[in-house]
Image 1 (cartoon, rainbow, N blue to C red):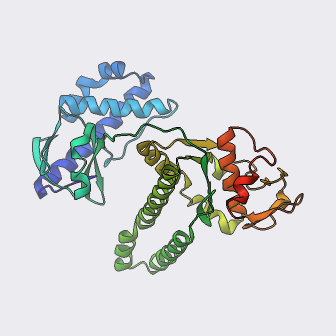
Image 2 (cartoon, one colour):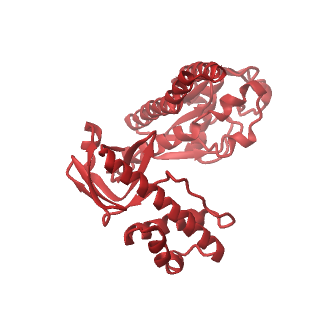
Length: 362
């Protein structure tokens, strides 16, 4: 994210260009939907000259608008795409040029504008790796450029075992070594923010509304930071021990899971997919293999005798096998089962990974 520092006049130029660009996108979407075409060449032939005349866009901005619409329309041809007036503008090398680290030259409705940038040390270290298209976005009235950065990836190694990771709500992640990454801090922060928002909304004054605006997005930023920290630790541990990372494939979990009414907010606020994405891209950079496994019965299966039963888990935190009496923390047991399932790429087999359980101190 590169922050722009335009003058007041340049700010209005960018805003007007953004509104006009997305207005053109909505027009193009209507034409594409009417003719039922999601081919870029065919849509280009149908709208190019009309869009340039109607919306006074430059040739390349028109091309980028057509591409944006086609990409959106391809996802689901049964509906017409709709674009917000403050939606993204896609820039390429023909209409955007970096001027060192101090400024960027980009095309607006009023022609090229040289706009200063505010770049921190994190961005400076990566600006030499910027590649391809750049998105112009606006967040809370501030313009940012989102460039694509090329990241060097290490060659994946041949793992010696797997680090299983069980994802959850009370404990965001528990690995097969028994390390716990608690979600208590996130849940407490969410409760505090929800309580504060409720009080401010009931008050309804101008100052309360200003306060609510300042709180917007705070929880998402906090959760994102926590997920970054957890994923970094997981990948670092796997790399240091030359293991792969084994994660549950939890796609569709929200629609399948049934919880009490009081727990629904926690379930639907659970950012497990973001955590998984962070683990995957950090692992890719570090050359750490990632394996997704079927999560079924991982917390109900005894790693000693293989007995599977709901009664093996008498409480949320406790695992006690009804067949052989083997016991331990439920999330740790699940993580060990996940690691084993990733290693053999098949359903958990009785007794074959007892050594990994006992060596973990259960």
